[in-house]
Image 1 (cartoon, helix red, strand yellow):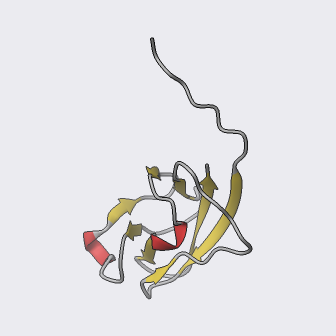
Image 2 (cartoon, helix red, strand yellow):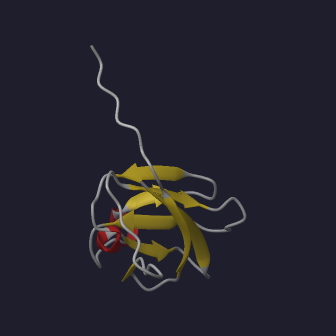
Image 3 (spheres, rainbow, N blue to C red):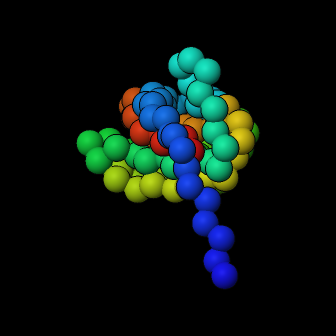
Length: 95
């Protein structure tokens, strides 16, 4: 028999990403139990790379505008991001 876990709550936030690799900065005391869904907004104009440290660059996971990825982490601040150019925005859903 398959066991299912129900998520009681989730939290959302946006993060600004620049051309300097940085950990995603969260506002307030957001908690995460299963992980973070990271989405590059459709109106972004450039690639955003996500990874686990300041070497994210072109070695990170590439997100084109509109792309998303689920990252199973308990500490969202461990997710780093960098933009190909300009300032881009990520939408985050913590569960």
